[in-house]
Each structure stands twice: as C-alpha cells, then as structure tokens.
Length: 303
Image 1: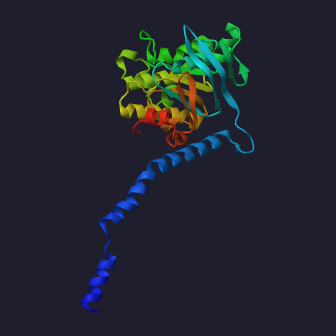
Image 2: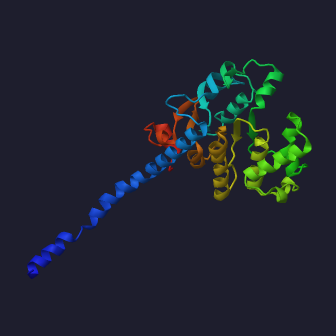
C-alpha cells in the first residue's frame, strides 16, 4: 500500500466530531420516554398477573367511579369532575394548591356529599347512603393522612391496632399478629418499633406506620393525602416503592393526592390533572409528557 492510499484510508475511517453529536442527541432525547414506557409495560404485566386474567377478554372492573361531580361551598370547588379507577390501578391526582384535590378524597370517604353527580364504590352509589351504611363502605378503604396523623399518646402497636379494635371482633393475639404482619410489610421491624411513641420516629417511619395502620383492615382501596410531603428524596423513594408494592403484591386500588410530580410518575397507572375546577387531563404518565397542551407543558416544567 502506497503512502497516498494509506493516508486516504485513515481519512475514510476518521469520523467528524459533529457526526457523534448528531447521532447521540436524538438518542438521548428518546431515553427518558423509552425508560418510562418500559416501566409502564412492566407494571401493566404485573397488574395482569395479579388479576389472573387477560384484560382483553375480561375487562377489569371499576372500583371507584366519580361521575359529573360538582361541589360548592361559598364558591364552586369542583365542576363536572369525572374519572374512574379500575381494580389494581394507582390514580395520582395532581394540580396546583387549592384546586380541590383533597376534597376528592373526602367525597370518596363520603365525608362530603356532592351538589350534583355521583360517587360509586364497587358499583354502589354512596352519595345518598345513611350514616351506618357509609361506615360500612369506609371499611373497604384505608386512609393515609398528610402528616401520618398518628395518636401521639399511643405506641406504634396501639396506633396500628386501633382500627382493628374499633371495627373488628379479633382477639388480642390475632390483633398482635395482624399488627406485626403490617409493620413487616412496610419494612419496619415489629420488635423494635411496636413500643415506641410517634415522637421517637423519623418522618419516614411515621409515614410507614401510617400506611401500616391504613392496611390493618386489609382494605381493597387505599387513599393517600400527600404521602411524600416533607420527606427527603431517599425516604420519598421508599414510600413510592411501598405504594407500588401494594399494587403489585396485594392488588390494592389506590388514589394518591400529591404535589410531587416525579414520585407520581413513578407510581401512577393514570394521572388526573385538576385545573380550573375540572379534570384537565386523565391518562398515563407517557401520554401526559407527550401532550402539546400549553398548560400541561407549563405545569410539568422541567420534568
């Protein structure tokens, strides 16, 4: 090979610096949506396995249905709001402060009655139930409050056992077994925490005890009001994991009210965006990030 041929071969093999940039940039641009799509596919497969059926031949039933709900106090808070949660789904309700997200949880618990519309649990309209019948419906639900809302004067054991003593006829040894089971499920060691008071716990541990208490009655529905509020990123990831664990292992249907859009995207089957008293968007996280709606783009910000 002559010097000239060798020089030409080297030039042919040498890539221009811009060639690398042009191929890498679009690849990076697609990474985020590709990873989220892979996670979503995995969650859908897990949900189908837990249901033990094929969704295309046997539709997954609606566990929660909110239909054309309007609610006003001195002024209208919710107007013609509709969405549904199917068995095993996690619906995250997001939106700006003061848009009525927590109000929806109170409607589901039947602590509030809509001026118009219908709220149904397992196909039963709860809007006009008597007080006693409403209590029976609430036994299907577990509630995790924003600040965990543990009883300060009670130990962890007494906090988790409280709903069992109030709403079941379980014997004390059965209650203890249930408390231990739920604490272990939320990755707490019963022998270490059961006799502790809430004041001795970290913020993340309080949230986990709150989840354990919500799970005590083995509910089919879990409601969360800002479950990751005020937590550091690692503890937020732990709480997010627990909510996913409930979906995967127990098939629990969850409604999560949250300001934490990143955490919501990790755990949600569907996102409901509440804006201007209505549901402005309802769909998967992938559909939301792909939306061209100016308000959605602004709400998502730099996500």
